[in-house]
Length: 217
Image 1 (cartoon, rainbow, N blue to C red):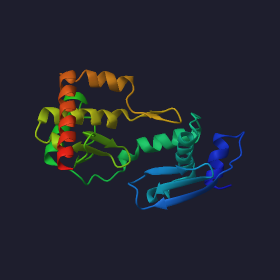
Image 2: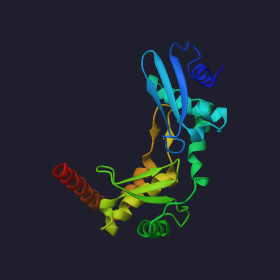
Image 3: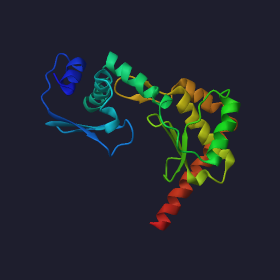
Image 4: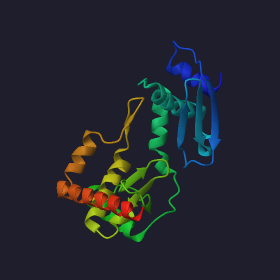
């Protein structure tokens, strides 16, 4: 039994897999990313090449997560749990090769103030997104902050704190969807000094960036 059949049989033991299917390992994805393309006749799984040497049990968990999304189910399996543990620990082995003095200073400042200096410094880069002011990527242990925040330490620190919470608290999964903003996350984000005021300022930044893009475009 191949990996797709085994993943499907564990997830839906009462059903038979009726779709044609294909698994491709691609160099076009970021480390440990994956996606599924679905039609009523065909399932095509595209995985980062980084997945190829990873154990079959973990890959089955990944495939099952994708199947849950395709078929809108919330089935839990041991393989999915193992896969989620694997993703949460990738930061321990991700190479730390990207840094920036301004971002690093913000991280260290907040690490001491809110995280008891317990967080390992990740990769940190500037981004150019219009709506997304910050993100944390578990697979590569990378925090990305929008270039538009470079001129405001106050807003930079606020967004950095948000992404550091993602790094520390990780996520939970119900089989179909991962929850990245649980009650603990929201409580700690609200406790950040002047959080509501800073949120309003960030919304102004987003609106301004959209307007500038319309003018340029």
